[in-house]
Length: 503
Ligand code: NBP
Image (cartoon, rainbow, N blue to C red):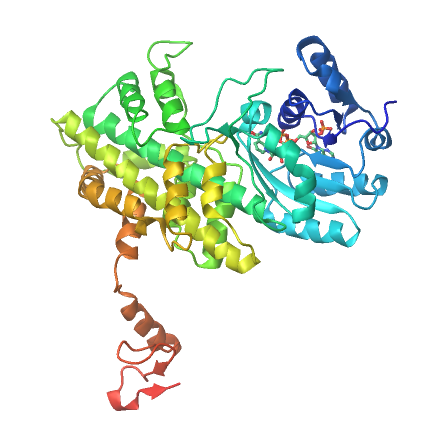
């Protein structure tokens, strides 16, 4: 048995754990690995020995005492097991083998409230706990994920050198992701896509909002595709060319890039394009729903983000939709002759909607930091998302720039760059939403983002009537525009104005 030479340990050798372990080893760190089912560990080690240049730095262990003994103190142990109960079970079986001062790092997709609870429980027992968002899936884990750690600054100081080594890297000047890492040949230089996000659950919260943004980013792209497909009647590959073209401009992003590839992919088992044969029901693992629930709980108007979750839910009603398609009729599709103009308008609608979606995500994090006592650095968060993760995009550098210009920015839409983009794109955006509505094509994300923009810029909204209704049926009181805020009134509706009372 090897003892005490590993720089770090990792539990959970499914797809994420294996890839992150190899990434750590490629960066020159010795890592001990353990998996509940020992067979998986043996298989992984055998594969490493055959195929991996860094195999000598990976130590396979088959019991927790052996695993723990292989790691230098204070031990740093990364968990990459199924989120939820499995994480609690893994922690419970691990703790009796640890010493005070050891650090447990949960890299799974934990709910931030679980992370807050676990951090409290472990700290009370003399251990440290970091909840680190890990984004980028399998490839990110292997060659550079975006890492969002939350926990005490002391625990972070211990983990930081390894986390900075293995994270994705972006160019210091341009912010563009650095690419080209290979097994045994990690990238060198560049700015690491990780930073201490804040205390306890902050990292997992920010990772969750990242996923919520991923949902809306994807939904917006789908709506753009759907409009081009139906209003112009184009084949998938031609639409793919449009996305490839958009990827050369300000919309340039990983999701636009893969959309261009997907749309141009021919069906490997038949004629035509694969996308036309993929069943139109979208799955979800829950982080988009968590984001929307958090927005509802905190009263943050993240309507477009929620629409993205509802759109997946609607897509899942496939059988009902097929039946309803026979029973419920909409308008005829119009004939659009000016394809270049329509495509330019849809591009603007997509960009403006995307700005609103991100504005909602950052507004949500701004509210959460008040609720949970964090101090989030939004410019850095946008920077961390520039590499490794699914929402990586040039656009994120604009967000970092906006928060550098004004660290106290209330809403991204108010930054001069984004404000100008909204002003110049909004006419097209409105035309596209109006055309979609008239054509009977669903654009929930484009439409709700536009409603958010219009609502946010309205100094007055019809909530005056709403509040009066609440006072009418429930005596919920109202404030008056001609009186100072904080003075509340009630009327015995429908009543004599003289019986209005201040409460
Ligand atoms: P899974 O989420 O599929 O989890 C499988 C791992 O959990 C296996 O190692 C399994 O051990 C272990 N495990 C389970 Br299940 N129950 C356990 C228990 N009670 N005690 C100990 N170990 C247990 O793996 P994954 O897809 O690699 O994801 C790992 C984590 O990373 C998850 O939290 C996931 O949400 C997160 N994440 C995943 C991605 C992605 O793209 N897949 C991206 C970002 C984050 P066994 O082999 O003995 O069954």
